[in-house]
Length: 101
Image (cartoon, rainbow, N blue to C red; front, side):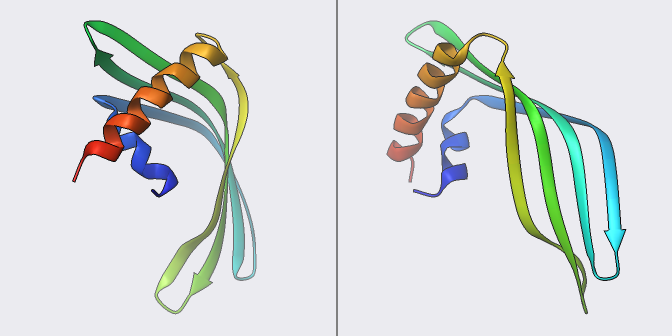
C-alpha cells in the first residue's frame, strides 16, 4: 500500500499550512512551511485524533510544462496529543484503508 493510502482510513483530515518561505535559483526552488496535520476517525464509539506538528520542505523543478514537485519531506516537531495517540489512530486508519477497494 502506498504511504498516503492510509489517509483514506480517516473520516476526515485537515492540514493547515502557513509561513511559506521560498528560495528559487534558476530552474530549482525550495519551499519550507509549517504544518498542523489533524486526522480524525471514530471507531467503536471512540473518537481518535492524530495531530502532528512540523514542517514541510518541498523541492521544485521547472519543466517545459511549468513547475513540478520533485521532492516532499515532512519534518516532525511533535504530537499535540502524544505519540501514542497518533500511532493508535494511524494503526486503525491503516487497517480501515486496507479493507477499502
